[in-house]
Length: 282
Image 1: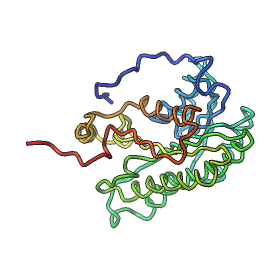
Image 2: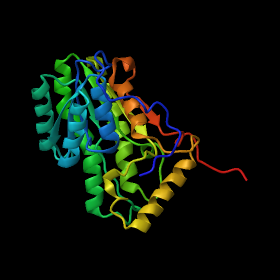
Image 3: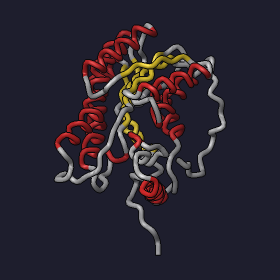
Image 4: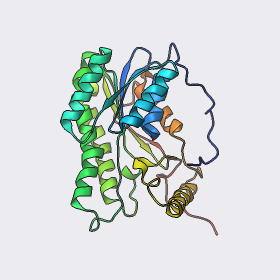
């Protein structure tokens, strides 16, 4: 998938920083087999965290963990279906046991489906809500007791620009991502006094293929879908898609002590997508 030009500071190596911003901490990143989740896991490891790479995709998840270890970082893979509460509980317990602690949770796993309300099947609706919203709840539910034992920690919930503004034919996706923002705020109200900071990250157009939907299309349709995505991204003030590393940098900030007074925030990393409706001057 071609990347739109304009990204800066992508030439850094992936070697682990001895005194990084997450040194001595253990983190869980869900949906880390590819895309944004992989970029976050690798960035966290580079900054000193011991990372549990959680995903349903065993091959991609193992590959992410192997890339981190090859670069000198610490990582393990854990199979997890975030829509299944028992699977999330097992994954969180295993992560804390493996590293003796848990300091950071990034709930990034997500899926999407297209369709207006009347067109979305009940099965698709339930699955999107289960993964995108219930999965975030399960992660917090089972991680918070471990964060409390460490005297606090950070939870970063990955929402979307479409949790802030609506988009055509995305009924289930917009509803789930809007719910993530409100859940984030509510968790922050309940747990910030215990030193557990909960914040939401809202990416816009990112140069990934969530769920491999475009890759599964026949070649002509795949090229059209990619061109349409890049054309929509070009309407934003910044005029391009993000690279996953740019989203990872924002997640790192929210997870680090540099964001010690950031609580219940919604951080948009969207190239200006949500600041106003794009239009062209004639």
